[in-house]
Image (cartoon, rainbow, N blue to C red; front, side, top):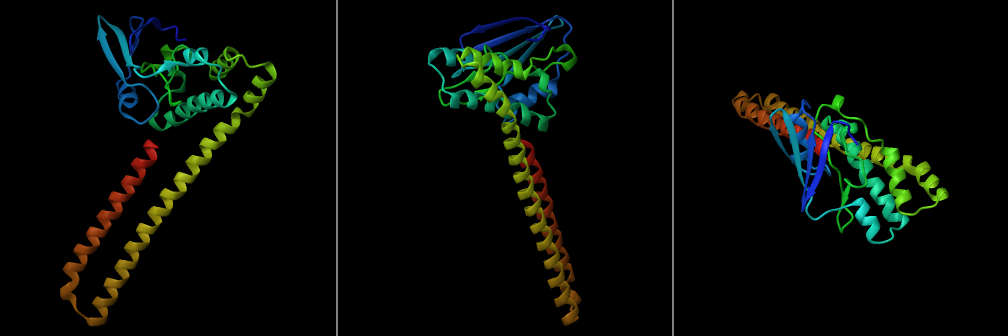
Length: 236
């Protein structure tokens, strides 16, 4: 756990994290975790007397520790928790978040009845954070779940497969976006050729203003779709 945290308390569905005096808040990061589609809890930040308080609404969720305590988890359920944590950390790079700012502790990683995993992100200067090791967290929840040493080693060794799956998903999405962009450019080129053909064949320059308007509209359409593709690649 971060050595810059002075206190953590939970009141009903609100988790409060108090930071030591002088901790620098990253406004950009607090906005990202609150409004992006990452599996992170939104955060309300209160600063007073040079101190920082972060409040997270965790209603509808229980801690991973409570989830495991409530009933004996299967290997599939443990793998799902590990995968949920790994995906969130992996995708956070798209938003320029720092991996070391996730609170990786079985008491502060949350899951709901549907198996959705959500993390707490600390939107403060990374230099003020002591990293919670991902491998240590995974080891702790597997031990807590009562897994034997052989099974723990097996899951740890196969953990790389999760990262490979995430990278494969990224490659597939990137391919689709580039393919869509290519189709739009082809449509623009074909339209230009058709208009040019009719203009020069009929020697009719009167339609040129209309052709220019049509080309500008198509170009605008291509630009908008290109921007849309980039935006989608950022949030998925």
